[in-house]
Image (cartoon, rainbow, N blue to C red; front, side):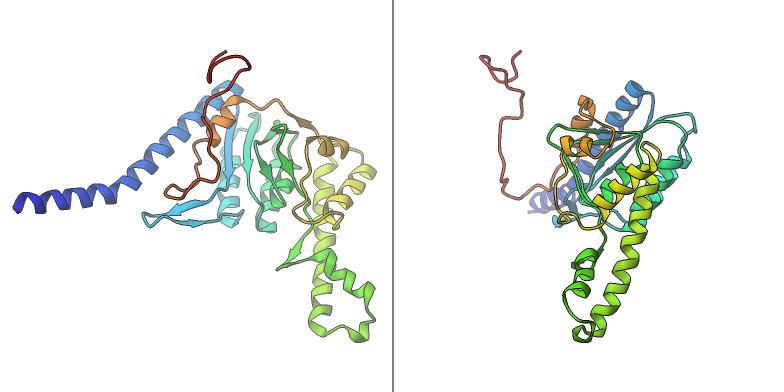
Length: 278
């Protein structure tokens, strides 16, 4: 009975420590992969990757977005980087707080050496705002960016202003009028920010045009801007994605314990050969 009791507590302690140990191993693997990419590209590599993650050992999935903590950490990393050293930012995010995204974008814009943003899957909304600060955006062939039009809660700012065009002002309630006032200011502010980011690599009149397209509600907020359309807009886009970026993304897994909706043999397939063959 004594041995059973001891084994029970040993099992309990190991079970409690297991998530922590796994997380430490994952952090170590990420650090090694980042160092490998830095050595290859002779740059400072920063990651801004938002995936669903598990909270502690309870395994509760939460969605993450760009926030002030992110901007503080990225700004610190930039500050610790020599002005002559290139910066590579691996970006994977649905977007987030405009203030935080603008802070990161402006800091990258001011960095004197080359800034490259890698988008292996998607960088929407505030993620796109950050990508616009780069000297080069490297996207997977199937990756997407997105519009940067501001959102007021659940409403797009551009759509709030449409109410003023569609209805007489006497029929619009005070709350909507207040929202419209804020929406107008938000649209102007974001457009000015985007234009300032774009002026580094395109003429001012073209920067004005592209800033309008991206920020003034041309598309729905979740509209995917693919590689071809990004190039049509005049963005400096490459599809030469280093293998290490994909390998780094593999080290940011979705939480375990849930039934996977996508499954496949995780090996490269070659026509006429066996999985993993050449």
